[in-house]
Length: 395
Image 1 (cartoon, rainbow, N blue to C red):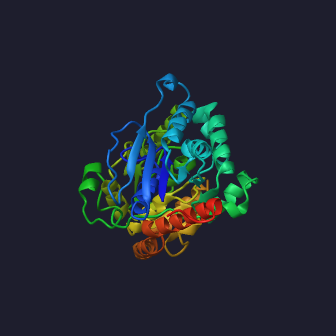
Image 2: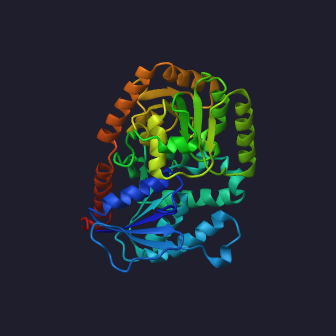
Image 3: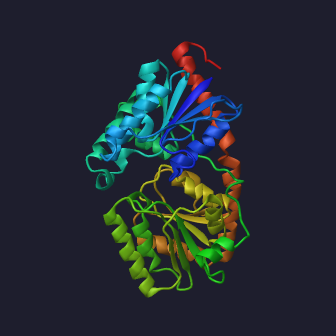
């Protein structure tokens, strides 16, 4: 079986959970089937397929669309990807950026299209701030891609319910749940402190860590309001890169500045760190916090759990399927700074509870969310789709 994975993000250009998902899924799928990755961005393309490894094809933006709305530029790349997917038995797209490519490739080459939903445009209206009229285009790409797909994969049961609500015309029988995964060798407890020293994190004080993009979805302003109510000795370490919009960036700047006026130990790293550095920051945190207002699964919570860190997170989307409330962490209502502060203080006040939750979290992450198991489930789904199209699967 030859599978074409279609994605915006792929190493070295990864900025979110969808990119992490595709990176690890591609590696594990390549052990089972032939995999071609078709991704945004120009890069050298290997001339020979190596057994057990994906073959990567990069697509730069079209010069005629440069400087225009980024959603329109993405659509241009999608058309090039659709052409490049010739020869695949099945195409598998990830996020709205590539859903249109999957839909067009399926029509063009007469092969099934499987689409994984990592988020849904109707659930993220704040993106109109970021994309302007492009939000209407991204929403259209997603709608066309998902409604036309042979099978839709949701990364959680909560996400499956969201798909049904947002796109009621999709037959529920065409929606499957396959979770995100975790690489426990990449994310594991790290006793070293060199990264903490570089970031000037005080090892004698407990701290709460946040890792995520500065976007409305991730709820960073909620956390910054809650942080004013944290125990005075607690530090707050924010690994949060560039903001989606100038306006949101200014809002976060004001909140961080105001917080620093009332407490010490507010550390904001406004650039992406290497994965081992992130793992070290997570490993030494008393609590990892995920204040998202929308989160289909929240792979970052799995990463923190794999580092044996207690998680305090919003009870939204697929997060309750990852964070076992009271055992691996605590769940709180979204957009509720007092509730978030109270839960964080509960963990900060009880180091034994934090340690027990962290140990339980790593055990759960390893046992239930391995990429190898997820790849095997995905191949089984491919076989089912191909069998439905052709009568028998092509292996």
